[in-house]
Image 1 (spheres, one colour):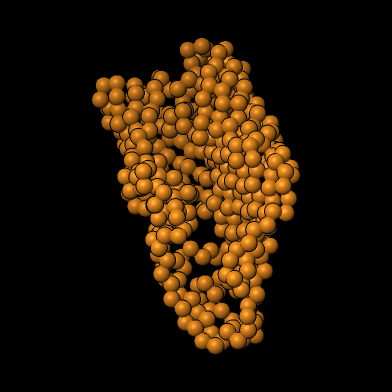
Image 2: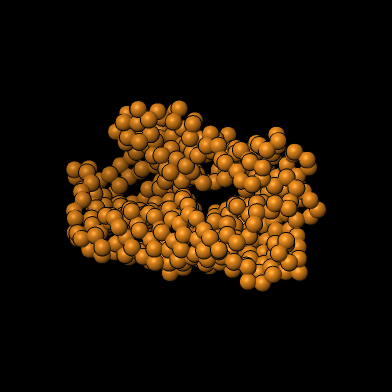
Length: 414
């Protein structure tokens, strides 16, 4: 519930708002402890990554679901209960005019409607400021992967009684993008209207803004439908595959300009804010390669042909916004909520924190991008000027929709 969390990342006006030093027990700052990375590199040693089956499709132990779960849910913190990773084992029922696939536990991965995951984040936000002005650099990362499975294909993958039918057209539509880079920035934040408490109080109206010059370091996009046309008799005629996939990749640097704006109003124990990021952020990539990807059924191999090279492409960073409100009651109780949209779906958080002496107890609920309810609980213990905080929360940041549980720890400095 501190001001150095989501609100300061998404709302530039909060750069002018002091941390809640007047709140009993509030730390100056916190340092996350990446226990998940320690466990990850223990399981996947750096000196053995060249032979690690997690990253090598040629390995008999390679599981693409596990790799995708790792990408969608980076192992920064410790996974108490990992997202389910279905096995690669499948069974087939085959006849002259019959084909039934039993994917076992993997059936849970087949979406009923369009499916996707996406987000925009700032992995780095460093800089310095004076008299309200701030100069720095941010690191941005944006991905969005969308898949649409048509009715016939979903039936073929999930129905263990009917399966594939004669004359079926099984289609999958894919549209995925990833881009990342750095953005030198200049901004300003300040209080334009003071409250009744004067200089000693945080009360008042704050505004903030920043301009970014984006330098995209990497960009890739894959689009196109893939269709499998089944004949009149499933195994008496050769099915045809029609793939019109295109992959775009670009060399550094994509360039563009965008900005952030924010506003905060504080009155006594109550505050409310609104921030909007990456307004007008369109990047131009001057050196893009476009490849046509097709599948040859006879040779069972993929073919790739460069159809354009050195062409210009344009991408956009999605507009991100946050609306937040918080209420401090007494010296140790804070309740609050925020609504965040960082590119794909709106996430809602509601939570509370109670501090009593050296102890802090926290809890909350949220609605994620998939409109699933998630839950969080945590606590902290202070030892003089140092404190230890632990939190657990559920999430569905994986291909499967089942919840996983993550534990995060941090050291707080008071």
